[in-house]
Length: 222
Length: 313
Image (cartoon, rainbow over all chains, first blue to last red; front, side, top):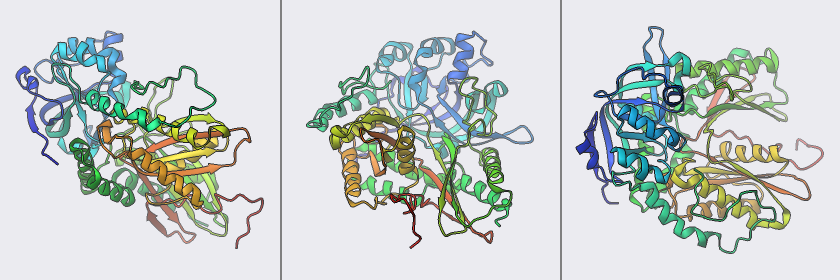
Protein backbone atom coordinates (compact mmCIF):
# COMPACT_ATOMS: atom_id res chain seq x y z
CA UNK A 1 0.00 0.00 0.00
CA UNK A 2 1.34 3.41 -0.93
CA UNK A 3 1.31 6.16 1.67
CA UNK A 4 -1.64 8.51 1.54
CA UNK A 5 -0.77 12.21 1.74
CA UNK A 6 -1.41 13.77 5.17
CA UNK A 7 -1.83 17.42 6.17
CA UNK A 8 -2.59 19.32 9.37
CA UNK A 9 -4.72 22.46 9.14
CA UNK A 10 -5.08 25.38 11.53
CA UNK A 11 -8.59 26.75 11.87
CA UNK A 12 -10.23 28.93 10.75
CA UNK A 13 -8.82 27.53 7.49
CA UNK A 14 -7.42 30.09 5.07
CA UNK A 15 -8.50 30.25 1.43
CA UNK A 16 -4.92 29.31 0.47
CA UNK A 17 -4.94 26.19 2.64
CA UNK A 18 -8.32 25.10 1.32
CA UNK A 19 -7.16 25.56 -2.27
CA UNK A 20 -4.34 23.07 -1.75
CA UNK A 21 -6.59 20.22 -0.54
CA UNK A 22 -6.78 17.30 -2.97
CA UNK A 23 -9.35 14.49 -2.87
CA UNK A 24 -7.93 11.49 -1.04
CA UNK A 25 -5.65 13.50 1.27
CA UNK A 26 -5.84 12.70 5.01
CA UNK A 27 -6.49 15.76 7.18
CA UNK A 28 -6.14 16.58 10.88
CA UNK A 29 -7.47 19.85 12.34
CA UNK A 30 -6.48 22.29 15.10
CA UNK A 31 -8.76 25.09 16.27
CA UNK A 32 -12.52 25.40 16.65
CA UNK A 33 -15.18 23.40 14.82
CA UNK A 34 -18.92 23.76 15.31
CA UNK A 35 -21.80 21.35 14.84
CA UNK A 36 -24.97 22.18 12.96
CA UNK A 37 -27.50 19.82 11.43
CA UNK A 38 -31.26 19.82 10.71
CA UNK A 39 -32.27 21.26 14.09
CA UNK A 40 -29.96 24.26 13.77
CA UNK A 41 -30.57 24.77 10.03
CA UNK A 42 -34.31 24.75 10.59
CA UNK A 43 -34.00 27.37 13.28
CA UNK A 44 -31.60 29.72 11.54
CA UNK A 45 -32.57 29.37 7.90
CA UNK A 46 -36.25 28.43 7.95
CA UNK A 47 -37.27 30.31 11.11
CA UNK A 48 -34.75 33.12 10.59
CA UNK A 49 -33.50 33.08 14.16
CA UNK A 50 -30.19 34.94 14.55
CA UNK A 51 -27.01 32.90 14.98
CA UNK A 52 -26.26 32.63 18.70
CA UNK A 53 -22.59 33.51 18.12
CA UNK A 54 -20.50 35.29 15.51
CA UNK A 55 -18.67 32.51 13.67
CA UNK A 56 -16.60 34.85 11.51
CA UNK A 57 -12.97 34.68 12.65
CA UNK A 58 -13.78 31.88 15.12
CA UNK A 59 -14.67 28.87 13.03
CA UNK A 60 -15.40 28.17 9.40
CA UNK A 61 -15.82 24.42 9.86
CA UNK A 62 -19.31 22.90 10.07
CA UNK A 63 -19.30 19.31 11.33
CA UNK A 64 -22.49 17.32 10.61
CA UNK A 65 -22.43 15.36 13.80
CA UNK A 66 -23.64 14.98 17.34
CA UNK A 67 -21.60 14.08 20.37
CA UNK A 68 -22.08 11.23 22.80
CA UNK A 69 -22.09 13.66 25.67
CA UNK A 70 -23.67 14.19 29.07
CA UNK A 71 -23.85 17.14 31.42
CA UNK A 72 -21.99 16.87 34.71
CA UNK A 73 -23.45 18.18 37.96
CA UNK A 74 -21.19 21.25 37.81
CA UNK A 75 -22.59 22.16 34.38
CA UNK A 76 -19.51 21.02 32.46
CA UNK A 77 -19.73 18.33 29.80
CA UNK A 78 -18.38 14.86 29.41
CA UNK A 79 -17.84 14.26 25.69
CA UNK A 80 -17.08 10.63 24.94
CA UNK A 81 -16.93 10.85 21.20
CA UNK A 82 -18.39 12.37 18.07
CA UNK A 83 -19.59 10.59 14.96
CA UNK A 84 -20.80 12.17 11.75
CA UNK A 85 -24.27 11.83 10.34
CA UNK A 86 -25.11 11.53 6.62
CA UNK A 87 -24.74 14.97 5.03
CA UNK A 88 -26.87 14.61 1.91
CA UNK A 89 -29.99 15.28 3.96
CA UNK A 90 -28.82 18.83 4.59
CA UNK A 91 -28.31 19.68 0.93
CA UNK A 92 -31.30 22.03 0.76
CA UNK A 93 -29.86 24.30 3.45
CA UNK A 94 -26.21 24.38 2.36
CA UNK A 95 -26.22 27.36 -0.03
CA UNK A 96 -27.89 29.67 2.50
CA UNK A 97 -25.81 28.35 5.36
CA UNK A 98 -22.46 28.85 3.63
CA UNK A 99 -23.46 32.38 2.62
CA UNK A 100 -24.70 33.26 6.09
CA UNK A 101 -21.80 31.85 8.10
CA UNK A 102 -18.77 32.00 5.83
CA UNK A 103 -18.23 28.29 6.41
CA UNK A 104 -15.58 26.89 4.08
CA UNK A 105 -15.15 23.32 5.29
CA UNK A 106 -18.08 20.96 5.67
CA UNK A 107 -17.40 17.68 7.46
CA UNK A 108 -19.77 14.75 7.61
CA UNK A 109 -20.62 11.28 6.42
CA UNK A 110 -20.99 10.22 2.81
CA UNK A 111 -20.56 13.54 1.01
CA UNK A 112 -23.13 15.69 -0.74
CA UNK A 113 -25.31 14.97 -3.79
CA UNK A 114 -23.06 15.12 -6.86
CA UNK A 115 -24.32 18.42 -8.24
CA UNK A 116 -23.79 20.23 -4.94
CA UNK A 117 -20.01 20.17 -5.24
CA UNK A 118 -19.99 22.10 -8.51
CA UNK A 119 -23.09 24.22 -7.88
CA UNK A 120 -22.82 25.09 -4.18
CA UNK A 121 -19.57 24.20 -2.42
CA UNK A 122 -16.90 24.99 -5.01
CA UNK A 123 -18.37 28.38 -6.07
CA UNK A 124 -18.40 29.38 -2.38
CA UNK A 125 -14.75 28.35 -1.96
CA UNK A 126 -15.82 25.47 0.24
CA UNK A 127 -14.72 21.82 0.34
CA UNK A 128 -16.11 18.67 1.91
CA UNK A 129 -14.13 16.42 4.23
CA UNK A 130 -15.49 13.03 5.14
CA UNK A 131 -15.06 11.21 8.42
CA UNK A 132 -13.51 7.75 8.20
CA UNK A 133 -15.26 4.44 8.57
CA UNK A 134 -17.75 5.53 9.52
CA UNK A 135 -17.69 5.84 13.19
CA UNK A 136 -14.24 6.71 14.47
CA UNK A 137 -16.06 8.20 17.44
CA UNK A 138 -13.33 7.38 19.95
CA UNK A 139 -10.46 8.79 17.87
CA UNK A 140 -12.40 11.99 17.24
CA UNK A 141 -13.37 12.15 20.92
CA UNK A 142 -9.66 12.18 21.78
CA UNK A 143 -9.19 15.22 19.56
CA UNK A 144 -11.72 17.35 21.43
CA UNK A 145 -9.87 19.27 24.13
CA UNK A 146 -12.75 21.41 25.33
CA UNK A 147 -16.41 22.25 24.87
CA UNK A 148 -16.12 25.96 24.18
CA UNK A 149 -19.84 26.60 24.07
CA UNK A 150 -23.18 24.98 23.38
CA UNK A 151 -26.36 26.66 22.17
CA UNK A 152 -30.02 25.61 22.10
CA UNK A 153 -29.23 22.59 24.25
CA UNK A 154 -32.51 22.57 26.16
CA UNK A 155 -34.58 23.32 23.11
CA UNK A 156 -32.96 20.93 20.65
CA UNK A 157 -31.42 18.27 22.90
CA UNK A 158 -27.84 16.99 22.99
CA UNK A 159 -27.95 15.48 19.48
CA UNK A 160 -29.26 18.58 17.69
CA UNK A 161 -27.77 21.42 19.74
CA UNK A 162 -25.07 23.67 18.26
CA UNK A 163 -21.76 22.71 19.85
CA UNK A 164 -18.45 24.55 19.60
CA UNK A 165 -15.50 22.26 20.18
CA UNK A 166 -11.87 23.22 20.65
CA UNK A 167 -9.90 20.53 18.88
CA UNK A 168 -6.31 19.42 18.56
CA UNK A 169 -4.97 16.96 16.02
CA UNK A 170 -8.63 16.22 15.34
CA UNK A 171 -9.08 13.50 12.75
CA UNK A 172 -8.50 11.64 10.59
CA UNK A 173 -10.69 13.04 7.85
CA UNK A 174 -10.40 12.38 4.11
CA UNK A 175 -10.71 15.19 1.55
CA UNK A 176 -13.75 14.36 -0.59
CA UNK A 177 -14.14 17.47 -2.75
CA UNK A 178 -11.85 20.22 -4.05
CA UNK A 179 -12.47 23.74 -5.31
CA UNK A 180 -13.01 22.48 -8.84
CA UNK A 181 -15.99 20.47 -7.63
CA UNK A 182 -14.29 17.07 -8.00
CA UNK A 183 -15.41 14.44 -5.51
CA UNK A 184 -13.75 11.28 -4.32
CA UNK A 185 -17.14 9.63 -3.70
CA UNK A 186 -18.18 10.46 -7.26
CA UNK A 187 -15.02 9.11 -8.91
CA UNK A 188 -15.05 5.91 -6.84
CA UNK A 189 -18.78 5.52 -7.43
CA UNK A 190 -18.29 5.83 -11.20
CA UNK A 191 -15.62 3.17 -11.17
CA UNK A 192 -17.75 0.74 -9.15
CA UNK A 193 -20.81 1.40 -11.36
CA UNK A 194 -18.89 0.07 -14.37
CA UNK A 195 -18.77 -3.40 -12.85
CA UNK A 196 -22.36 -3.62 -11.64
CA UNK A 197 -23.89 -4.77 -14.92
CA UNK A 198 -21.77 -7.93 -14.90
CA UNK A 199 -22.79 -8.65 -11.33
CA UNK A 200 -26.49 -8.74 -12.19
CA UNK A 201 -26.01 -10.63 -15.45
CA UNK A 202 -28.21 -13.72 -15.65
CA UNK A 203 -30.27 -12.86 -12.56
CA UNK A 204 -33.85 -12.62 -13.78
CA UNK A 205 -36.05 -9.82 -12.51
CA UNK A 206 -38.72 -10.69 -9.92
CA UNK A 207 -42.34 -11.16 -11.01
CA UNK A 208 -43.69 -8.27 -8.96
CA UNK A 209 -42.06 -4.94 -9.64
CA UNK A 210 -42.02 -2.07 -7.21
CA UNK A 211 -43.67 1.16 -8.22
CA UNK A 212 -41.04 3.59 -9.42
CA UNK A 213 -38.39 0.87 -9.58
CA UNK A 214 -35.46 1.38 -11.92
CA UNK A 215 -32.66 -0.84 -13.18
CA UNK A 216 -30.30 2.07 -13.72
CA UNK A 217 -27.35 0.95 -11.61
CA UNK A 218 -25.82 4.42 -11.66
CA UNK A 219 -28.69 5.68 -9.54
CA UNK A 220 -28.10 6.60 -5.94
CA UNK A 221 -30.58 6.53 -3.09
CA UNK A 222 -29.87 10.17 -2.30
CA UNK B 1 -35.54 -16.51 42.52
CA UNK B 2 -33.12 -14.06 40.85
CA UNK B 3 -32.84 -10.77 42.76
CA UNK B 4 -33.89 -7.86 40.55
CA UNK B 5 -30.77 -5.83 41.36
CA UNK B 6 -28.72 -8.45 39.50
CA UNK B 7 -30.48 -7.29 36.35
CA UNK B 8 -29.77 -3.62 37.12
CA UNK B 9 -26.10 -4.48 37.30
CA UNK B 10 -26.02 -6.83 34.30
CA UNK B 11 -27.99 -4.55 31.99
CA UNK B 12 -25.83 -1.52 32.74
CA UNK B 13 -22.62 -3.52 32.31
CA UNK B 14 -23.62 -4.84 28.89
CA UNK B 15 -24.77 -1.40 27.74
CA UNK B 16 -21.30 -0.12 28.59
CA UNK B 17 -19.49 -3.10 27.11
CA UNK B 18 -21.47 -2.98 23.87
CA UNK B 19 -20.82 0.72 23.41
CA UNK B 20 -17.08 0.56 24.11
CA UNK B 21 -15.62 -2.85 23.24
CA UNK B 22 -15.87 -4.25 19.73
CA UNK B 23 -16.74 -7.97 19.87
CA UNK B 24 -13.63 -10.06 19.24
CA UNK B 25 -15.19 -12.13 16.42
CA UNK B 26 -15.96 -8.96 14.48
CA UNK B 27 -12.55 -7.40 15.18
CA UNK B 28 -10.73 -10.50 13.95
CA UNK B 29 -12.98 -10.57 10.88
CA UNK B 30 -12.01 -7.00 9.98
CA UNK B 31 -8.36 -7.58 10.75
CA UNK B 32 -8.25 -10.46 8.31
CA UNK B 33 -9.95 -8.28 5.68
CA UNK B 34 -7.17 -5.69 5.93
CA UNK B 35 -4.75 -8.21 4.44
CA UNK B 36 -7.05 -8.94 1.52
CA UNK B 37 -7.78 -5.31 0.72
CA UNK B 38 -5.45 -4.10 -2.05
CA UNK B 39 -6.91 -0.61 -2.41
CA UNK B 40 -5.15 2.21 -0.51
CA UNK B 41 -8.20 4.10 0.69
CA UNK B 42 -10.24 1.04 1.64
CA UNK B 43 -7.28 -0.38 3.48
CA UNK B 44 -6.70 2.93 5.27
CA UNK B 45 -10.31 2.97 6.46
CA UNK B 46 -10.11 -0.56 7.89
CA UNK B 47 -6.84 0.16 9.68
CA UNK B 48 -8.29 3.37 11.12
CA UNK B 49 -11.24 1.40 12.47
CA UNK B 50 -8.84 -0.98 14.22
CA UNK B 51 -7.14 2.09 15.76
CA UNK B 52 -10.52 3.46 16.78
CA UNK B 53 -11.50 0.29 18.65
CA UNK B 54 -8.19 0.34 20.46
CA UNK B 55 -8.74 3.97 21.45
CA UNK B 56 -12.29 3.19 22.63
CA UNK B 57 -11.24 0.26 24.82
CA UNK B 58 -8.13 2.09 26.06
CA UNK B 59 -9.97 5.29 27.03
CA UNK B 60 -13.25 3.57 27.97
CA UNK B 61 -15.14 5.82 25.56
CA UNK B 62 -17.81 4.78 23.03
CA UNK B 63 -16.36 3.49 19.76
CA UNK B 64 -19.03 5.34 17.79
CA UNK B 65 -20.88 8.40 18.98
CA UNK B 66 -23.99 7.49 17.03
CA UNK B 67 -25.50 5.21 19.61
CA UNK B 68 -27.98 3.83 17.09
CA UNK B 69 -31.10 2.44 18.71
CA UNK B 70 -30.12 0.58 21.88
CA UNK B 71 -32.40 -2.39 22.50
CA UNK B 72 -32.60 -5.71 24.34
CA UNK B 73 -33.12 -9.36 23.55
CA UNK B 74 -34.06 -11.49 26.54
CA UNK B 75 -33.97 -15.27 26.70
CA UNK B 76 -35.74 -16.58 29.77
CA UNK B 77 -35.09 -20.08 31.03
CA UNK B 78 -38.35 -21.97 31.47
CA UNK B 79 -37.39 -22.68 35.09
CA UNK B 80 -36.19 -19.16 35.89
CA UNK B 81 -37.94 -16.93 38.35
CA UNK B 82 -37.38 -13.19 38.58
CA UNK B 83 -38.01 -11.04 41.65
CA UNK B 84 -40.85 -8.70 40.74
CA UNK B 85 -41.53 -10.62 37.53
CA UNK B 86 -41.21 -9.46 33.95
CA UNK B 87 -42.49 -5.98 34.65
CA UNK B 88 -39.67 -5.46 37.14
CA UNK B 89 -37.18 -6.74 34.57
CA UNK B 90 -38.46 -4.36 31.90
CA UNK B 91 -38.18 -1.54 34.40
CA UNK B 92 -34.56 -2.54 35.13
CA UNK B 93 -33.77 -2.46 31.40
CA UNK B 94 -35.22 1.04 31.02
CA UNK B 95 -33.28 2.23 34.04
CA UNK B 96 -30.02 0.75 32.76
CA UNK B 97 -30.58 2.49 29.41
CA UNK B 98 -31.07 5.87 31.04
CA UNK B 99 -28.13 5.37 33.37
CA UNK B 100 -25.78 4.26 30.57
CA UNK B 101 -26.83 7.26 28.49
CA UNK B 102 -25.69 9.57 31.27
CA UNK B 103 -22.67 7.67 32.53
CA UNK B 104 -20.94 6.06 29.49
CA UNK B 105 -22.08 8.54 27.99
CA UNK B 106 -24.22 7.48 25.02
CA UNK B 107 -25.76 9.87 22.57
CA UNK B 108 -29.43 10.39 23.40
CA UNK B 109 -30.76 9.32 20.02
CA UNK B 110 -34.35 8.53 20.82
CA UNK B 111 -36.87 11.21 20.00
CA UNK B 112 -40.61 11.28 19.38
CA UNK B 113 -41.12 10.65 15.63
CA UNK B 114 -43.39 13.66 15.18
CA UNK B 115 -42.57 16.14 17.93
CA UNK B 116 -38.82 15.33 17.97
CA UNK B 117 -38.80 15.68 21.74
CA UNK B 118 -35.69 14.13 23.31
CA UNK B 119 -35.74 13.08 26.94
CA UNK B 120 -31.93 12.74 26.73
CA UNK B 121 -31.97 9.18 28.08
CA UNK B 122 -32.76 6.91 25.10
CA UNK B 123 -36.06 5.93 26.74
CA UNK B 124 -39.52 6.70 25.40
CA UNK B 125 -42.65 5.20 23.88
CA UNK B 126 -41.68 1.68 22.73
CA UNK B 127 -38.04 2.46 23.43
CA UNK B 128 -35.85 0.59 24.17
CA UNK B 129 -37.42 -2.38 22.37
CA UNK B 130 -37.41 -5.60 24.38
CA UNK B 131 -37.80 -8.89 22.53
CA UNK B 132 -38.50 -12.07 24.48
CA UNK B 133 -37.66 -15.71 23.83
CA UNK B 134 -37.63 -18.82 25.99
CA UNK B 135 -35.34 -21.76 26.59
CA UNK B 136 -36.48 -25.11 28.00
CA UNK B 137 -34.92 -26.88 31.00
CA UNK B 138 -32.73 -24.04 32.31
CA UNK B 139 -33.11 -21.52 35.11
CA UNK B 140 -30.93 -18.63 33.88
CA UNK B 141 -31.89 -15.46 32.02
CA UNK B 142 -29.78 -14.16 29.12
CA UNK B 143 -29.88 -10.41 28.64
CA UNK B 144 -28.43 -9.15 25.35
CA UNK B 145 -28.16 -5.57 24.22
CA UNK B 146 -27.60 -4.48 20.64
CA UNK B 147 -26.91 -0.91 19.57
CA UNK B 148 -27.59 -1.10 15.86
CA UNK B 149 -27.50 1.94 13.62
CA UNK B 150 -30.96 3.08 12.74
CA UNK B 151 -31.00 4.85 9.38
CA UNK B 152 -29.49 2.93 6.46
CA UNK B 153 -28.83 -0.56 5.16
CA UNK B 154 -32.15 -2.34 5.68
CA UNK B 155 -34.80 -3.22 3.13
CA UNK B 156 -37.71 -5.63 2.65
CA UNK B 157 -39.37 -7.07 -0.43
CA UNK B 158 -42.12 -9.56 -1.17
CA UNK B 159 -40.72 -12.08 -3.65
CA UNK B 160 -42.53 -15.14 -4.95
CA UNK B 161 -41.45 -18.78 -5.10
CA UNK B 162 -40.98 -18.49 -8.88
CA UNK B 163 -38.40 -15.72 -8.35
CA UNK B 164 -36.18 -18.39 -6.81
CA UNK B 165 -32.59 -17.92 -5.67
CA UNK B 166 -32.14 -15.38 -8.50
CA UNK B 167 -34.70 -13.15 -6.85
CA UNK B 168 -32.95 -13.46 -3.51
CA UNK B 169 -29.56 -12.61 -5.02
CA UNK B 170 -30.93 -9.68 -6.96
CA UNK B 171 -32.62 -8.09 -4.00
CA UNK B 172 -29.56 -8.74 -1.86
CA UNK B 173 -27.38 -6.93 -4.42
CA UNK B 174 -29.94 -4.14 -4.76
CA UNK B 175 -29.83 -3.47 -1.03
CA UNK B 176 -26.05 -3.67 -0.66
CA UNK B 177 -25.32 -1.49 -3.68
CA UNK B 178 -27.97 1.07 -2.75
CA UNK B 179 -26.71 1.49 0.79
CA UNK B 180 -23.07 0.61 0.12
CA UNK B 181 -22.58 3.63 -2.14
CA UNK B 182 -20.78 6.31 -0.11
CA UNK B 183 -20.75 3.79 2.73
CA UNK B 184 -24.17 4.73 4.06
CA UNK B 185 -24.52 1.34 5.78
CA UNK B 186 -21.04 1.61 7.35
CA UNK B 187 -19.68 -1.56 5.74
CA UNK B 188 -17.96 -4.02 6.01
CA UNK B 189 -20.95 -5.36 7.86
CA UNK B 190 -22.35 -8.55 9.23
CA UNK B 191 -25.21 -9.00 6.79
CA UNK B 192 -28.41 -10.60 8.00
CA UNK B 193 -30.97 -12.03 5.61
CA UNK B 194 -34.47 -12.93 6.74
CA UNK B 195 -36.39 -15.32 4.49
CA UNK B 196 -40.04 -16.19 4.90
CA UNK B 197 -42.37 -15.68 7.82
CA UNK B 198 -44.88 -12.87 7.65
CA UNK B 199 -43.61 -9.41 6.83
CA UNK B 200 -42.81 -8.51 10.43
CA UNK B 201 -41.23 -11.91 11.21
CA UNK B 202 -39.15 -11.61 8.06
CA UNK B 203 -37.76 -8.28 9.25
CA UNK B 204 -37.24 -9.57 12.76
CA UNK B 205 -35.40 -12.72 11.63
CA UNK B 206 -33.10 -10.82 9.29
CA UNK B 207 -32.23 -8.29 11.93
CA UNK B 208 -31.58 -10.98 14.51
CA UNK B 209 -29.44 -12.86 11.96
CA UNK B 210 -27.28 -9.75 11.55
CA UNK B 211 -27.09 -8.73 15.19
CA UNK B 212 -27.28 -11.93 17.23
CA UNK B 213 -24.95 -14.31 15.39
CA UNK B 214 -21.16 -14.07 15.38
CA UNK B 215 -18.68 -13.95 12.50
CA UNK B 216 -17.99 -17.51 11.34
CA UNK B 217 -21.23 -18.97 12.64
CA UNK B 218 -23.16 -21.09 10.09
CA UNK B 219 -26.82 -22.02 9.82
CA UNK B 220 -27.31 -25.68 10.85
CA UNK B 221 -29.07 -26.42 7.55
CA UNK B 222 -26.08 -27.18 5.29
CA UNK B 223 -27.74 -25.83 2.14
CA UNK B 224 -28.56 -22.56 3.87
CA UNK B 225 -25.00 -22.48 5.21
CA UNK B 226 -23.73 -22.79 1.61
CA UNK B 227 -26.00 -19.94 0.53
CA UNK B 228 -24.66 -17.80 3.40
CA UNK B 229 -21.11 -18.29 2.11
CA UNK B 230 -22.16 -17.67 -1.47
CA UNK B 231 -23.87 -14.41 -0.54
CA UNK B 232 -20.88 -13.33 1.53
CA UNK B 233 -18.57 -13.85 -1.46
CA UNK B 234 -21.03 -12.11 -3.73
CA UNK B 235 -20.96 -9.02 -1.51
CA UNK B 236 -17.18 -8.94 -1.50
CA UNK B 237 -17.11 -9.18 -5.30
CA UNK B 238 -19.23 -6.08 -5.89
CA UNK B 239 -15.99 -4.13 -6.19
CA UNK B 240 -16.89 -1.97 -3.24
CA UNK B 241 -15.14 -1.48 0.06
CA UNK B 242 -15.74 0.65 3.15
CA UNK B 243 -17.28 4.09 2.56
CA UNK B 244 -18.22 3.04 -0.97
CA UNK B 245 -14.60 3.32 -2.10
CA UNK B 246 -13.26 0.89 -4.67
CA UNK B 247 -12.37 -2.27 -2.79
CA UNK B 248 -13.37 -5.80 -1.86
CA UNK B 249 -14.68 -5.46 1.70
CA UNK B 250 -18.47 -5.36 2.01
CA UNK B 251 -19.35 -8.36 4.16
CA UNK B 252 -17.54 -9.68 7.20
CA UNK B 253 -20.08 -12.46 7.14
CA UNK B 254 -23.60 -13.24 5.99
CA UNK B 255 -26.21 -14.98 8.13
CA UNK B 256 -29.56 -16.29 6.95
CA UNK B 257 -32.55 -17.14 9.14
CA UNK B 258 -35.76 -18.63 7.83
CA UNK B 259 -39.37 -18.86 8.95
CA UNK B 260 -42.22 -20.84 7.41
CA UNK B 261 -44.13 -18.49 5.15
CA UNK B 262 -47.24 -18.13 2.97
CA UNK B 263 -47.37 -20.87 0.33
CA UNK B 264 -47.53 -18.24 -2.40
CA UNK B 265 -44.77 -15.98 -1.15
CA UNK B 266 -41.06 -15.69 -0.39
CA UNK B 267 -40.53 -12.46 1.56
CA UNK B 268 -36.94 -11.33 2.06
CA UNK B 269 -35.27 -8.73 4.25
CA UNK B 270 -31.63 -7.62 4.28
CA UNK B 271 -29.93 -5.93 7.24
CA UNK B 272 -26.39 -4.66 7.79
CA UNK B 273 -24.72 -4.58 11.20
CA UNK B 274 -22.08 -1.88 10.89
CA UNK B 275 -18.39 -1.20 11.61
CA UNK B 276 -19.39 -0.64 15.22
CA UNK B 277 -21.21 -3.95 15.66
CA UNK B 278 -22.26 -3.36 19.25
CA UNK B 279 -23.57 -6.38 21.10
CA UNK B 280 -23.02 -7.81 24.55
CA UNK B 281 -24.72 -10.50 26.61
CA UNK B 282 -25.00 -11.26 30.31
CA UNK B 283 -26.21 -14.57 31.67
CA UNK B 284 -27.81 -14.08 35.05
CA UNK B 285 -27.86 -17.39 36.91
CA UNK B 286 -30.41 -18.49 39.47
CA UNK B 287 -27.87 -17.90 42.28
CA UNK B 288 -27.29 -14.33 41.10
CA UNK B 289 -23.92 -14.98 39.45
CA UNK B 290 -23.45 -12.99 36.23
CA UNK B 291 -21.36 -14.16 33.26
CA UNK B 292 -20.54 -11.80 30.39
CA UNK B 293 -19.87 -12.66 26.76
CA UNK B 294 -20.25 -11.25 23.22
CA UNK B 295 -21.99 -14.21 21.56
CA UNK B 296 -25.74 -13.88 22.26
CA UNK B 297 -26.40 -17.59 21.43
CA UNK B 298 -29.90 -16.51 20.48
CA UNK B 299 -30.71 -19.09 17.82
CA UNK B 300 -30.92 -22.28 19.85
CA UNK B 301 -32.36 -25.52 18.47
CA UNK B 302 -35.52 -24.67 20.39
CA UNK B 303 -35.77 -21.32 18.55
CA UNK B 304 -35.44 -23.03 15.17
CA UNK B 305 -37.78 -25.96 15.94
CA UNK B 306 -40.14 -27.08 13.16
CA UNK B 307 -42.14 -29.69 15.07
CA UNK B 308 -45.44 -29.43 16.90
CA UNK B 309 -43.97 -30.66 20.17
CA UNK B 310 -40.58 -30.07 21.72
CA UNK B 311 -38.94 -33.01 23.41
CA UNK B 312 -36.16 -32.22 25.82
CA UNK B 313 -33.90 -35.03 24.58
